[in-house]
Amino acid sequence: MKKVVAVIVFIFLSLLFSSWVAAEVGVTLNLDRVEATLEDSVRMEVNISGSRSSDAIPVFHGFEDFMVTKGGTSSRVEIVNGKVNSGITYTYFIQPRKTGTFKIGPVSIKVDGRVLESNSATLTVKVSSQQSGHNRKPVFIEASISSHDVYVEQQALYSLKLYRRVNVDDLSLNLPEMEHITFKQLGRPHEYQTTYAGSEYQVLEIRYTLLASKEGDYAIGPSKINMSVRRPGRRSPFDDFFSSSSSGRPMTVASKPLELKVLALPEEGKPADFSGLVGDFQIKSRLEPTGLKAGESATLTVQVSGRGNVNRIPDIDLPEMPFARIYSDQPVLETEQDAHGFGGKKTMKWALVPGKAGRFEIPVLTLSFFNSDTEKYNILHTPVHTLSVLPGETQEVAVFHSSPGAGKTAESPIKKEIQQIGKDILPIHTSADNLSAPYRTLSTGWRFQLALIGPLLIYMMLLGSLKLRNQSPERLALSKSRNAFKALTKRCRQDQPGCADLIDVFKNYLNDRLSLSIGTLTADDAAGFLQKQGADPETAGKMCLLIQRLENAVYAGEDLKNTDAANDLIELVKALEKEIR
Image (tube, rainbow, N blue to C red; front, side, top):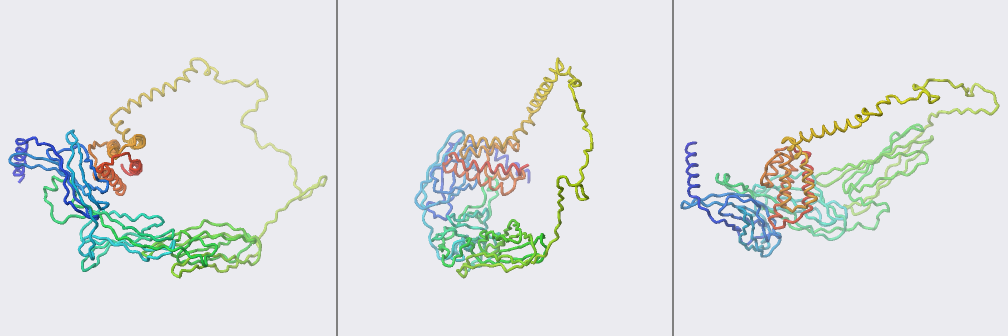
């Protein structure tokens, strides 16, 4: 079998080199359709004929209103009537951001040292057709909200359900960005099976709390999920050999917008000390011990717990008590969550040290909140605590006085003579006769000069030997590895490179840091290099997305100076410095 394969390869290579005819190099752009909707992803191919190598990334024109995703690169060789035709195909998927008729292209690319330009294509983007039900769609998303009328700071549940009948991966969610509206995820997503409109679906459900900080009418925009949908069916083994493109097709699904009415908290019945706490809460307190002696310490503990915007639980102030000193502890806030929202508790403690005996009452503490279920204000009260204090043991301090001229008594302090308890270890000189400068010969003459110049000569010799040592190939590689991050930071901040330059900057960083010789860097290659070197998969994924973003900017002809992308690159590489080996 191996001999047969070797013969086939030999015949193929013989035909290839004996029949090679230099073909004219050209670039063409093709779309898989002329009309699309906002939910579609259009397949676009850039074909380079007459060459199997390209030393640049294609630059697109007319893509300001599209999101570009790289699909893969494949090379081809065809033998027709004894003539060999070769080429490269770049595959991309473009997703429109708005409706209209758009001119796609041209695409320019550098091939064999020349800059070539492709043709242009026209694409018409229309509004998605409204279909009754989702039973004909393999993938769709639904959004829901627990209540369309809420009060300010009242928790509402926002749920997203992704229904699918096909295999998907590389999911990324984009929640609507709105002023005065915040989303907080509740736990991890749940996955289960269900029947929808007579069809079996796999469901991925994600739940959030929605909190509004200002009253008004809001239109919650659609949530979008970007994913890669795997194409069904078998692939040819030649596809795996000649193509580096994946079997997934990018797709974006969006939920329908929702209406939300946020009501202001009522002024009627609002307590003067209301802190903005909304939900349902309780208060508990205890005093331990309830009986002690004067000078001892008792602890008053107050705990406020419940569900709602627990971050608004205020620090309760304990009023001054004339019978005791008060020492407050740092309040502790603990939050928790479940499928219905956020809750928690806040614990406050005080140490009470009474200074006299008696029976005393601890002042009652209050806390107000707004109950969104009953739509009323509630005031919580701590119970009355009584502290019983017994007389404490006091220590008398005797102070003795002596009047001038009075005789000494047994209680009077006796004045003692001064006694010598030790001698100084150094001699005390009472004159300058015995003072002299030891080793005077060392402070003058050639010995003195040698003592001054000798350390400098030794330092210069050591410095020269270190420089010679550092010039070895191993030392140079180690120096480059150590200074790779510094060089990247300097290039990003001083030179202010464009998007294409940033990709090159990161490629040079990998070459210096890991002693590699990468010629061309792609997002997938970068993620693979980093994970092999021990980088965290999350950090490697973020770097992959950043390089894809830079590539998309280059594809769209927006290769301008990008300060935000440069800062993002510096922060990600700073994290990589702590992870890679």
